Image (cartoon, rainbow, N blue to C red):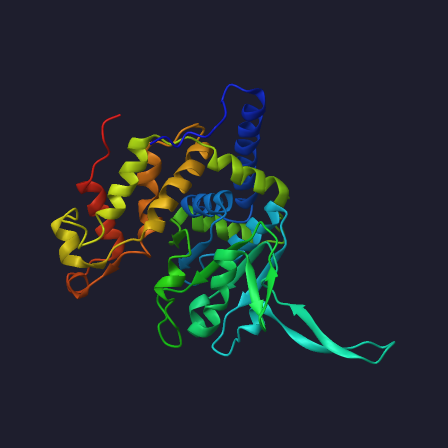
Length: 342
Protein backbone atom coordinates (compact mmCIF):
# COMPACT_ATOMS: atom_id res chain seq x y z
CA UNK A 1 0.00 0.00 0.00
CA UNK A 2 1.26 3.45 -0.85
CA UNK A 3 -0.78 6.57 -0.23
CA UNK A 4 1.97 9.02 -1.13
CA UNK A 5 0.51 11.31 -3.77
CA UNK A 6 2.43 14.51 -3.16
CA UNK A 7 4.35 15.22 -6.38
CA UNK A 8 7.57 16.34 -4.70
CA UNK A 9 8.21 18.29 -1.52
CA UNK A 10 11.35 19.67 -3.15
CA UNK A 11 9.50 21.76 -5.69
CA UNK A 12 9.27 25.46 -5.03
CA UNK A 13 5.55 25.49 -5.79
CA UNK A 14 4.66 22.84 -3.21
CA UNK A 15 6.89 24.43 -0.58
CA UNK A 16 5.23 27.79 -1.17
CA UNK A 17 1.76 26.25 -0.86
CA UNK A 18 2.68 24.53 2.38
CA UNK A 19 4.17 27.74 3.81
CA UNK A 20 1.01 29.63 2.88
CA UNK A 21 -1.12 26.93 4.50
CA UNK A 22 0.84 27.16 7.75
CA UNK A 23 0.79 30.98 7.72
CA UNK A 24 -2.96 31.06 7.17
CA UNK A 25 -3.84 28.54 9.87
CA UNK A 26 -1.62 30.39 12.36
CA UNK A 27 -3.26 33.70 11.41
CA UNK A 28 -6.75 32.21 11.79
CA UNK A 29 -5.94 31.00 15.29
CA UNK A 30 -4.53 34.41 16.17
CA UNK A 31 -7.62 36.24 14.93
CA UNK A 32 -10.05 33.82 16.58
CA UNK A 33 -8.26 34.26 19.90
CA UNK A 34 -9.07 37.96 19.79
CA UNK A 35 -12.63 36.96 20.73
CA UNK A 36 -12.23 33.45 22.13
CA UNK A 37 -10.14 32.66 25.20
CA UNK A 38 -8.65 29.16 25.49
CA UNK A 39 -10.36 26.20 23.74
CA UNK A 40 -7.20 25.54 21.68
CA UNK A 41 -8.04 21.91 20.97
CA UNK A 42 -11.58 22.75 19.83
CA UNK A 43 -10.32 25.52 17.54
CA UNK A 44 -7.81 23.11 16.02
CA UNK A 45 -10.55 20.52 15.48
CA UNK A 46 -12.73 23.06 13.66
CA UNK A 47 -9.79 24.10 11.49
CA UNK A 48 -9.05 20.49 10.61
CA UNK A 49 -12.72 20.04 9.64
CA UNK A 50 -12.46 23.06 7.35
CA UNK A 51 -9.20 21.96 5.77
CA UNK A 52 -10.57 18.51 4.93
CA UNK A 53 -14.08 19.65 3.96
CA UNK A 54 -15.82 18.02 6.92
CA UNK A 55 -18.44 19.04 9.45
CA UNK A 56 -18.09 19.52 13.19
CA UNK A 57 -20.46 19.00 16.12
CA UNK A 58 -19.76 21.25 19.11
CA UNK A 59 -20.98 19.93 22.44
CA UNK A 60 -20.80 22.26 25.40
CA UNK A 61 -22.57 23.71 28.37
CA UNK A 62 -24.38 27.04 28.09
CA UNK A 63 -22.04 30.02 28.14
CA UNK A 64 -19.00 28.26 26.66
CA UNK A 65 -19.00 30.58 23.59
CA UNK A 66 -20.00 27.97 21.02
CA UNK A 67 -21.94 30.40 18.85
CA UNK A 68 -19.35 33.17 19.16
CA UNK A 69 -16.60 30.74 18.18
CA UNK A 70 -18.36 29.69 14.96
CA UNK A 71 -19.29 33.26 14.01
CA UNK A 72 -15.72 34.47 14.58
CA UNK A 73 -14.26 31.55 12.62
CA UNK A 74 -16.54 32.28 9.65
CA UNK A 75 -15.43 35.91 9.60
CA UNK A 76 -11.72 35.09 9.60
CA UNK A 77 -12.30 32.69 6.68
CA UNK A 78 -14.02 35.38 4.63
CA UNK A 79 -17.00 33.10 4.00
CA UNK A 80 -20.75 33.61 3.84
CA UNK A 81 -22.23 32.76 7.22
CA UNK A 82 -25.81 31.79 8.11
CA UNK A 83 -27.26 30.77 11.45
CA UNK A 84 -30.32 28.61 12.10
CA UNK A 85 -31.79 28.48 15.59
CA UNK A 86 -33.25 24.99 15.83
CA UNK A 87 -36.58 24.80 17.66
CA UNK A 88 -39.27 22.08 17.97
CA UNK A 89 -41.51 23.80 15.42
CA UNK A 90 -38.80 24.29 12.77
CA UNK A 91 -39.75 22.79 9.40
CA UNK A 92 -37.42 21.30 6.73
CA UNK A 93 -38.38 24.10 4.34
CA UNK A 94 -37.12 26.62 6.91
CA UNK A 95 -33.67 25.15 6.26
CA UNK A 96 -33.64 24.25 2.56
CA UNK A 97 -35.93 26.94 1.21
CA UNK A 98 -39.20 26.50 -0.67
CA UNK A 99 -41.04 27.20 -3.91
CA UNK A 100 -43.48 30.08 -3.96
CA UNK A 101 -45.99 31.16 -6.60
CA UNK A 102 -44.67 34.27 -8.31
CA UNK A 103 -46.56 36.43 -10.79
CA UNK A 104 -44.84 38.16 -13.71
CA UNK A 105 -46.03 41.83 -13.65
CA UNK A 106 -45.65 42.16 -17.43
CA UNK A 107 -47.47 39.06 -18.61
CA UNK A 108 -49.55 38.27 -15.55
CA UNK A 109 -48.45 34.65 -15.72
CA UNK A 110 -47.86 32.74 -12.53
CA UNK A 111 -45.09 30.25 -11.93
CA UNK A 112 -43.07 28.56 -9.25
CA UNK A 113 -40.02 30.42 -7.97
CA UNK A 114 -37.49 28.83 -5.62
CA UNK A 115 -36.54 30.94 -2.59
CA UNK A 116 -33.25 29.59 -1.16
CA UNK A 117 -33.11 28.87 2.55
CA UNK A 118 -30.24 29.58 4.97
CA UNK A 119 -28.56 26.31 3.99
CA UNK A 120 -27.16 28.12 0.93
CA UNK A 121 -24.07 29.49 2.66
CA UNK A 122 -20.45 28.50 3.20
CA UNK A 123 -20.56 28.20 6.97
CA UNK A 124 -23.88 27.10 8.45
CA UNK A 125 -24.31 27.30 12.21
CA UNK A 126 -26.98 24.81 13.29
CA UNK A 127 -27.55 26.15 16.79
CA UNK A 128 -28.94 23.63 19.30
CA UNK A 129 -29.49 21.07 16.57
CA UNK A 130 -30.94 18.53 19.02
CA UNK A 131 -33.94 20.77 19.77
CA UNK A 132 -35.72 19.95 16.51
CA UNK A 133 -37.44 16.68 15.49
CA UNK A 134 -35.63 14.08 13.32
CA UNK A 135 -37.66 15.04 10.23
CA UNK A 136 -36.13 18.52 10.30
CA UNK A 137 -32.69 17.28 11.34
CA UNK A 138 -32.67 15.02 8.27
CA UNK A 139 -32.96 18.08 6.01
CA UNK A 140 -29.25 18.56 6.62
CA UNK A 141 -28.21 15.02 5.66
CA UNK A 142 -28.22 15.47 1.89
CA UNK A 143 -26.41 18.78 2.03
CA UNK A 144 -23.71 17.47 4.38
CA UNK A 145 -22.93 14.50 2.17
CA UNK A 146 -23.85 15.58 -1.37
CA UNK A 147 -23.55 19.41 -1.28
CA UNK A 148 -27.11 19.68 -2.55
CA UNK A 149 -30.71 19.81 -1.38
CA UNK A 150 -33.92 18.60 -2.99
CA UNK A 151 -37.12 20.64 -2.90
CA UNK A 152 -40.29 19.38 -4.60
CA UNK A 153 -38.29 16.88 -6.63
CA UNK A 154 -35.74 19.39 -7.90
CA UNK A 155 -32.14 19.28 -6.80
CA UNK A 156 -30.26 22.49 -6.03
CA UNK A 157 -26.48 22.66 -5.78
CA UNK A 158 -24.71 24.23 -2.80
CA UNK A 159 -21.49 25.93 -3.83
CA UNK A 160 -18.37 24.76 -1.98
CA UNK A 161 -16.80 25.27 0.43
CA UNK A 162 -19.65 24.24 2.71
CA UNK A 163 -19.37 23.42 6.41
CA UNK A 164 -22.03 22.60 8.97
CA UNK A 165 -20.94 23.54 12.47
CA UNK A 166 -23.67 22.33 14.81
CA UNK A 167 -24.00 22.95 18.54
CA UNK A 168 -25.82 20.96 21.17
CA UNK A 169 -26.32 21.20 24.92
CA UNK A 170 -25.42 17.92 26.69
CA UNK A 171 -27.34 18.52 29.95
CA UNK A 172 -30.83 19.57 28.89
CA UNK A 173 -32.84 16.48 27.96
CA UNK A 174 -36.38 17.83 28.17
CA UNK A 175 -37.58 19.01 24.77
CA UNK A 176 -34.59 17.59 22.90
CA UNK A 177 -34.32 14.96 20.16
CA UNK A 178 -31.04 13.00 20.12
CA UNK A 179 -29.40 13.00 16.70
CA UNK A 180 -29.81 9.72 14.78
CA UNK A 181 -26.65 7.66 14.41
CA UNK A 182 -26.73 8.14 10.61
CA UNK A 183 -26.55 11.90 11.06
CA UNK A 184 -23.96 11.75 13.84
CA UNK A 185 -21.74 9.71 11.54
CA UNK A 186 -21.74 12.59 9.02
CA UNK A 187 -19.84 14.78 11.49
CA UNK A 188 -16.08 14.52 11.33
CA UNK A 189 -15.64 15.62 14.96
CA UNK A 190 -17.64 15.83 18.13
CA UNK A 191 -15.63 18.54 19.90
CA UNK A 192 -16.41 19.16 23.55
CA UNK A 193 -16.07 22.67 24.98
CA UNK A 194 -15.30 22.58 28.68
CA UNK A 195 -15.06 25.26 31.34
CA UNK A 196 -12.05 27.57 31.32
CA UNK A 197 -9.53 27.79 34.14
CA UNK A 198 -9.54 30.70 36.60
CA UNK A 199 -6.99 32.82 34.69
CA UNK A 200 -8.83 32.32 31.40
CA UNK A 201 -12.15 33.27 32.99
CA UNK A 202 -10.52 36.45 34.32
CA UNK A 203 -9.37 37.26 30.78
CA UNK A 204 -12.92 36.73 29.49
CA UNK A 205 -14.27 39.13 32.11
CA UNK A 206 -11.67 41.74 31.15
CA UNK A 207 -12.55 41.38 27.44
CA UNK A 208 -16.31 41.52 27.79
CA UNK A 209 -17.04 44.07 30.52
CA UNK A 210 -15.52 47.16 28.91
CA UNK A 211 -16.38 49.32 25.93
CA UNK A 212 -13.69 47.68 23.80
CA UNK A 213 -14.84 45.16 21.17
CA UNK A 214 -12.70 42.46 19.60
CA UNK A 215 -13.03 42.34 15.82
CA UNK A 216 -11.39 39.47 13.95
CA UNK A 217 -9.86 40.26 10.55
CA UNK A 218 -10.41 38.29 7.34
CA UNK A 219 -7.43 36.02 6.68
CA UNK A 220 -8.33 33.93 3.62
CA UNK A 221 -11.20 33.18 1.22
CA UNK A 222 -13.23 30.29 -0.13
CA UNK A 223 -11.10 29.71 -3.22
CA UNK A 224 -7.92 29.38 -1.16
CA UNK A 225 -9.63 27.03 1.32
CA UNK A 226 -10.53 24.70 -1.56
CA UNK A 227 -6.86 24.72 -2.61
CA UNK A 228 -5.85 23.88 0.97
CA UNK A 229 -8.25 20.91 0.90
CA UNK A 230 -6.46 19.58 -2.19
CA UNK A 231 -3.08 20.12 -0.52
CA UNK A 232 -4.18 18.16 2.55
CA UNK A 233 -5.23 15.19 0.43
CA UNK A 234 -1.81 15.21 -1.26
CA UNK A 235 -0.01 14.77 2.07
CA UNK A 236 1.66 11.33 2.30
CA UNK A 237 0.78 8.73 4.93
CA UNK A 238 2.78 5.55 5.44
CA UNK A 239 1.08 2.17 5.27
CA UNK A 240 1.94 1.43 8.91
CA UNK A 241 0.28 4.64 10.12
CA UNK A 242 -2.86 4.02 8.06
CA UNK A 243 -2.98 0.44 9.30
CA UNK A 244 -2.71 1.65 12.91
CA UNK A 245 -5.76 3.87 12.34
CA UNK A 246 -7.70 0.92 10.93
CA UNK A 247 -6.69 -1.34 13.83
CA UNK A 248 -7.90 1.23 16.36
CA UNK A 249 -11.26 1.50 14.60
CA UNK A 250 -11.70 -2.25 14.24
CA UNK A 251 -10.85 -2.73 17.91
CA UNK A 252 -13.99 -0.76 18.87
CA UNK A 253 -16.25 -3.42 17.31
CA UNK A 254 -17.13 -6.12 19.85
CA UNK A 255 -17.98 -8.71 17.18
CA UNK A 256 -14.99 -8.08 14.86
CA UNK A 257 -13.40 -11.56 14.65
CA UNK A 258 -11.96 -11.44 18.16
CA UNK A 259 -9.88 -8.31 17.48
CA UNK A 260 -11.61 -6.28 20.21
CA UNK A 261 -10.23 -6.35 23.77
CA UNK A 262 -12.35 -7.71 26.61
CA UNK A 263 -13.41 -4.29 27.93
CA UNK A 264 -14.79 -3.39 24.49
CA UNK A 265 -16.80 -6.62 24.40
CA UNK A 266 -18.13 -5.85 27.88
CA UNK A 267 -19.05 -2.18 27.47
CA UNK A 268 -19.68 -1.52 23.74
CA UNK A 269 -22.79 -2.33 21.74
CA UNK A 270 -21.66 -0.97 18.37
CA UNK A 271 -18.22 0.18 17.26
CA UNK A 272 -17.08 2.85 14.83
CA UNK A 273 -17.80 2.62 11.10
CA UNK A 274 -15.40 2.59 8.17
CA UNK A 275 -15.97 6.34 7.90
CA UNK A 276 -14.09 6.70 11.20
CA UNK A 277 -10.96 5.16 9.66
CA UNK A 278 -11.27 7.43 6.61
CA UNK A 279 -11.64 10.50 8.81
CA UNK A 280 -8.74 9.48 11.07
CA UNK A 281 -6.34 9.35 8.12
CA UNK A 282 -7.72 12.44 6.38
CA UNK A 283 -7.79 14.55 9.56
CA UNK A 284 -4.33 13.23 10.43
CA UNK A 285 -3.03 14.68 7.16
CA UNK A 286 -4.40 18.12 8.04
CA UNK A 287 -3.03 17.94 11.58
CA UNK A 288 0.41 16.96 10.32
CA UNK A 289 0.56 20.00 8.01
CA UNK A 290 -0.70 22.28 10.78
CA UNK A 291 2.09 21.03 13.03
CA UNK A 292 4.77 21.64 10.42
CA UNK A 293 5.25 18.08 9.17
CA UNK A 294 4.93 16.74 5.62
CA UNK A 295 3.83 13.24 6.58
CA UNK A 296 1.29 11.74 8.98
CA UNK A 297 2.71 10.42 12.25
CA UNK A 298 1.26 7.99 14.77
CA UNK A 299 0.73 10.91 17.15
CA UNK A 300 -1.60 12.59 14.64
CA UNK A 301 -3.84 9.52 14.49
CA UNK A 302 -3.88 8.96 18.24
CA UNK A 303 -4.55 12.62 19.05
CA UNK A 304 -7.71 12.51 16.92
CA UNK A 305 -9.18 9.19 18.09
CA UNK A 306 -11.38 10.65 20.83
CA UNK A 307 -13.01 13.59 18.98
CA UNK A 308 -13.56 11.45 15.87
CA UNK A 309 -14.92 8.34 17.58
CA UNK A 310 -16.69 9.60 20.73
CA UNK A 311 -19.97 9.95 18.78
CA UNK A 312 -19.51 6.73 16.80
CA UNK A 313 -19.02 4.22 19.63
CA UNK A 314 -22.30 3.26 21.32
CA UNK A 315 -22.03 1.92 24.87
CA UNK A 316 -24.35 -0.56 26.62
CA UNK A 317 -25.99 -0.62 30.03
CA UNK A 318 -22.89 -2.18 31.64
CA UNK A 319 -20.94 1.01 30.90
CA UNK A 320 -23.75 3.14 32.28
CA UNK A 321 -23.89 0.97 35.39
CA UNK A 322 -20.14 1.37 35.93
CA UNK A 323 -20.41 5.11 35.16
CA UNK A 324 -18.10 4.96 32.18
CA UNK A 325 -18.48 7.32 29.22
CA UNK A 326 -17.17 6.96 25.68
CA UNK A 327 -14.10 9.12 26.37
CA UNK A 328 -13.04 6.78 29.17
CA UNK A 329 -13.44 3.74 26.93
CA UNK A 330 -11.42 5.35 24.13
CA UNK A 331 -8.66 6.32 26.57
CA UNK A 332 -8.51 2.71 27.71
CA UNK A 333 -8.36 1.64 24.06
CA UNK A 334 -5.36 3.91 23.39
CA UNK A 335 -3.60 2.49 26.45
CA UNK A 336 -4.34 -1.03 25.25
CA UNK A 337 -3.22 -0.41 21.66
CA UNK A 338 0.12 1.37 21.81
CA UNK A 339 1.63 2.95 18.73
CA UNK A 340 4.23 0.79 16.96
CA UNK A 341 7.83 1.80 17.44
CA UNK A 342 8.96 4.20 14.70
